[in-house]
Length: 341
Ligand SMILES: *Cc1c(COP(=O)(O)O)cnc(C)c1O
Image (cartoon, rainbow, N blue to C red; front, side, top):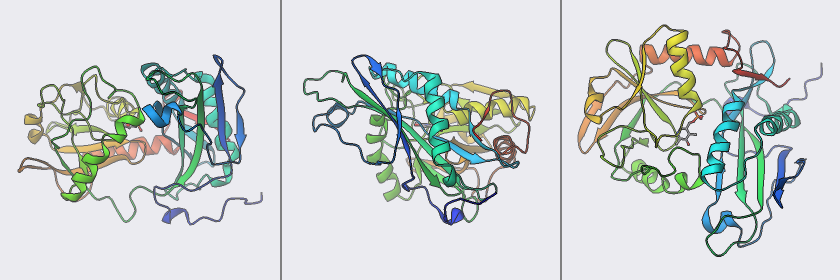
């Protein structure tokens, strides 16, 4: 078979935008979604007063397509991205893009850019970004009535280039999400307001922020773009339970893997900041890295150290098992892997 793959140095790709050949576009007007098309045009033209530009009416998703050990191109649990986007849309007064159509659009976008799917073993993946925004002019504060749903694809490099380096977190003076606010949905506005906190964290020498619950500032929630798991000294995997955390698909999958594949006890419960010094491992989880070890957490001069030399033992097992499932080296639970080609 002819190798038509793009001439890209897969292993040296970073996590940035690279234009690919096609993106999926569907428009919502007069109460209906149109049939959708694959477009070669990477630009979006909208009215200067579009709802997204004035009042940030937009939400997004993120998932990856990649090549498995037996040469298939697959996506990991895209049905959960479709479901989560539906929840985001409802909270933001946007029309749901039907979930079967979401998965079909993912498949079409990957197939149209198949030569950008990195080969097995490269560590690189084709990152997919579904998103939706209000496109018609609004000036009084109200929901748009016309929307655009798009998915673009961009190849991204291996997350852990040059080895796994544990990261440092600090507890910021800023909050991420309010009770009954929008912390549980993937709204663009959640990221806009986190930018100042992340720039400030970087200026202070930290990689990320560990947000506490805004009501009491005593409980651990998550970072700006990843959920958190801990491992207790007796090897229990625990993760914070809160209605203001974004329900990470990676975290939900890891908790299942911990219990069903590794036979570990798992717990989703409220976690006080004051108890995390008793845990032995801490890691961030999300689509980009799967798991990223946390070396230390700093809160107003108080330092909690988990260790700066690589992944903890349980974190590593979780990482190897979930990435093994994703890459087809380990049997996946029913429905987790969507084969595209
Ligand atoms: C997207 C996101 C995550 C990670 O979710 P995954 O589905 O695992 O990629 C975690 N926290 C926040 C705030 C997010 O936006």
